[in-house]
Picture (cartoon, helix red, strand yellow):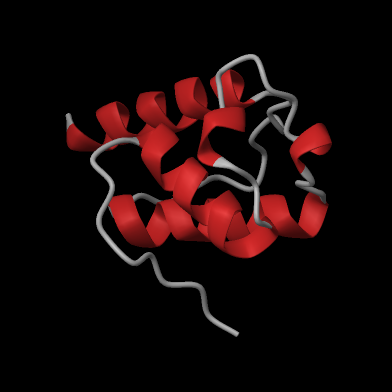
Length: 88
């Protein structure tokens, strides 16, 4: 099963909110920087799927040695940094 966003979010947190709402039924207002990904239902497999979605959506290539983020904010910071790095 391939996940496809219904609309194109403009930023990383938008992608995370839409992904978690579609896949896990997580209300978007729960997806805030301080939210723990594990408490939102993101396990290791879901994290991989989310990372692949970032690669597809933002045209970036993720390294296999990335530190696994614990919070939504850490994930956003990580993805924003990678997107900025690959644009330069």
